Image (cartoon, rainbow, N blue to C red; front, side, top):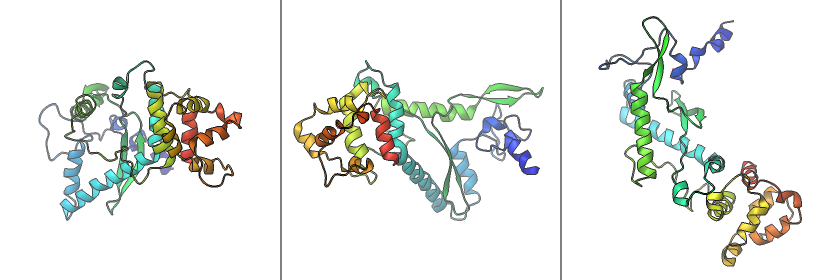
Length: 281
């Protein structure tokens, strides 16, 4: 019975402070100066490192290990589903917008990570569109939940948006963000045929018209405008393998499309979904 009570308790979600604002043990931020001896229920990551360092023996080494663990974990996650993210983002690209305008598109992801006793990071969940709300619900003197400006939210989220604007609009380096993964690196270990060759060419050709409505047949028409030497340099052995099509050796992309024309059912398949499905396989 105790287990059921815990599961049904909304305050057991420790990684979501908004779920715990009605908890009688919730410690709200003060309006004035904060007391460093009090651990509030919501605080920035910098405060987390301060609290964690109090329980570590070799503080500097341990913190370096933990921070690198976060980078490695996020890096691996982005490698796993980056094309899915980009495919989703394609729906927000303006059909009539210029490349310069669409280049400002960005997506913020939130990662909930916990550490075990060996300081190894474990992913709890990924939030595709984390909340940008700058208020939080707190209990007033009458015991009623009311909205109140959150100093932590303003500090963290305002800096986040400011840094994003610096990177995308001013093309400046960030004071806070680190490059975990640069997909412009052609030698990246996770570079695979589908993404690095086919998907990038697809984006380049379609430009602002990159949409889920594009079919394989449309892509064939797009690819035909490429220089012949470029088409000849691109092989599609991985696509052939994933489709279980019996072909010996590598074939060119042009040959692959000619073969696809023999299978009309493929021509009406959504191209982005097709790429994602191939990658997942």
